Length: 358
Image 1 (tube, rainbow, N blue to C red):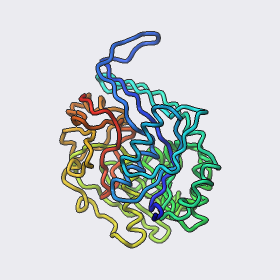
Image 2 (cartoon, rainbow, N blue to C red; image 1 turned 180 degrees about the vertical axis):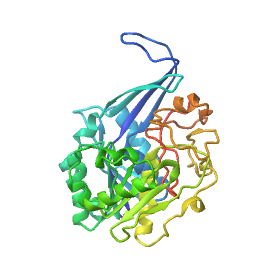
Image 3 (tube, helix red, strand yellow; image 1 turned 180 degrees about the horizontal axis):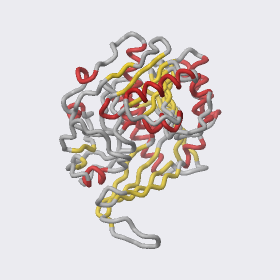
């Protein structure tokens, strides 16, 4: 069997979401209107997105030996992701995110990493063959940073391209992450945390890119929401702005952008595909690119929309006046990050859920 082209080392999180008219006060019980269970986690989202875009993909992660973990493994299989190195443990529960969203889009969230933090060096050693034979290895920071760094080092030692998404960002990020990342992809918020430079325009993004190159990165992508992104590399040290085309938003999850990024950016890197240029490679409606399974989607115009800060659930879209629903028999998942559309890298909806309507 051919080795996976994309190997993701990252997190799996089960989302438990309740929609209610208002958030409860301390010690108070309130009635909710809807409840959803979905599949989340940056690593899993990005991995599924890569698979949906046609890349042979494998996920290295850890879930609990519980019903959430069992469901997660099955969901990955349904999405064509290899689960050979999805470990299950009795020492911790599957990671969860408990989310309450009120009618105004305000939310409270409790994330319990659980089994995600038990992914360790031994797990990477067992998966060393697929890591070292991949075309690209991708990591984030929702598992132990030391494990992510070790995975990047293993890949680089074997000549495998690496893509690192420093999310959630750490101000004291280990400097080795920069030197072991072929592609370093961050958004404006993460860029500011890492460099101290607020990113308010293209010039700021270029400054961030140059600083990250100085720290050892080979290629830096700073995503800018509706403004597209700025790219800068050692080979091309002049920042390049790649604008984003206007689309009708279906799902703004940045994890989908990252999954698209690894599936297509590395085809470009390996010389099998030209780098996409703005609207020319984007469909008029992302709804046109919906995978075969039904997906959570917002039926609004949304053209040129800049940002929806931390849109953690469909309730935030509804609160903004955007009609929202989960397709009949389809799926739902939280929108776990602000709008970040890498130009030409299709931001399809993420995976999972129970198909109820909002």
